[in-house]
Image 1: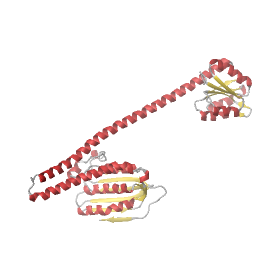
Image 2: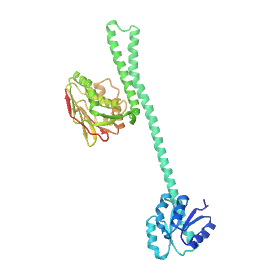
Image 3: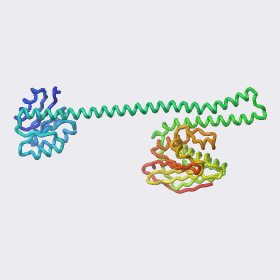
Image 4: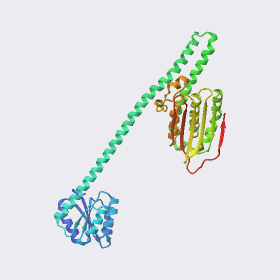
Length: 390
């Protein structure tokens, strides 16, 4: 590469080609020449040039037809049009198509050198601007990556402390019950009660471990190889019988309305978890005599699911927090002691992992309505209508 730049002169006049060479090479430029459009095109494709001096009219075509392949090779190559007086309008057209400047025949060595130096300065500035933009993009990306790593580190530390805290309480209680029995502190007539409490605490511990495992497994199970096309209604109907028993035990009205049966591309197990967590939450936090209503339909190529209850509701200031790990509202803790605070975070991860969204509408003391949507599987439609209720 020339110390100052590589120049290609494309002109059918030998005098222009050699005159340009004599003017430029002593100044430190490397100069190649071509007499025809085809020869110029070949050299453009095979070589690396910083600036092209291009005659408007060549024996085998218009020189400006070389502007697109020049830009394709390198958009920062500077093209300078060489033209006679009668073709100034054509030169202007060339500039509109991306040429940097034009120089009229005949021209002096000084004018040629000035035009070439200005063109190369323009190229240098353009390349420098792109380099700085690339550095800025890389710096911004590194900053985002650093911020994300710091956020993940903070989350990991906080999550670890939360898990330790949540695990400690049931383990400590379970140990206390068992030690009291082992050391004979509990009278025989009270041992059955203590054992029942120990079982309840161990179940609380098992629920927490199960939810943690489900949450941890969710990311891997969301991968496309784990998915298949399935009926969201089938996934709902599989979990309804057990949930209906829970509702009946509390004397609640439990209604399921399947308006359409949309097919989604999803992880089968997680669709069951999605329905179970939303519906069981509604049942758990709705007083006896209340109502839980589930609907499923399809709108505009989205599977739309809603779970609405007449339960304790969620205060507006708590609604932004309920999808955070381990968070439970004060009203939820007061009504139901047992609970991991991991059910709704798992729901959110499942829905968003399947390219869906979930929203909540709620007011304290007036119940809640959870609405989610998932994209319908490509090339399939919903089917059938079914209703069931208690």
